[in-house]
Image 1 (cartoon, helix red, strand yellow):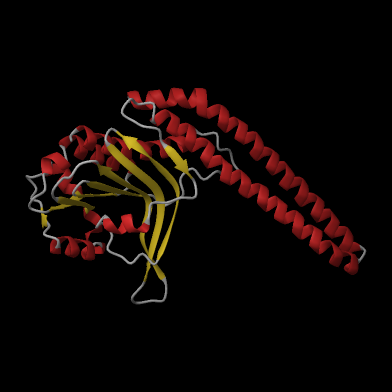
Image 2 (cartoon, rainbow, N blue to C red; image 1 turned 90 degrees about the vertical axis):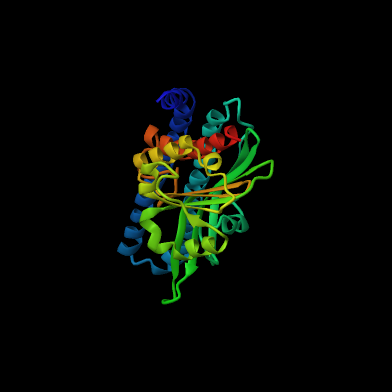
Length: 308
């Protein structure tokens, strides 16, 4: 609760003024679109009334250029809104003494190789798209994350099937560790047969209910190799953090520990922090949703760093 109160205070003093400034840009853009639509409609009516077909032909090119300009202005607003807000959120997040400077790149993504090395999704990932890359350091851990949209070709139909859409994080501890652990949403077991089979071949066995917390076992399938330090890699505090976030957001979480590397995937069906054009973006809930997901991922990494 204290963390939310701190973020709300930061939002009021720092993020809200930027949202108000961007809101004025959005409103000017809307007025331009409205005036342009009315003007073009009037010109079209006049041309039709006077049956000025030849004159209308010469107006096609200027109209085309002007519509392209409007689309450019809309895209410019979209492309500047998220970086402005995300960088402010990161200023709040990295105020902690345990955090290094966080960097943001809207066009970059976690590499495909790292996504596949997680052992969470066994797929060729024929379509691998991503954006909004954040990187930095928490304690001794270097990490990176980004939004990803991953699809694969269907074996039955000539189309692309969903594999994963959401936020994906990779972190690495600067010392060697043994063992591997895989945590999967229980309700998606039927779609994860290739993942489970592959992990079994790597020496992974399913953990019994008494090995982890009872509530955790109700929602997650957990597998580990025989040399994994389960208590160290998956502490009670971390289990509680994952369960609490799942309960609050109803979003599914995948986690894997591959020796000294951590991989976390959180499902998210929509693009986070994409600005609205026809309605206001001055909303604490809109900003807090993004902060909450970033804060969860950071807290898991931070917990792992502290316990090691």
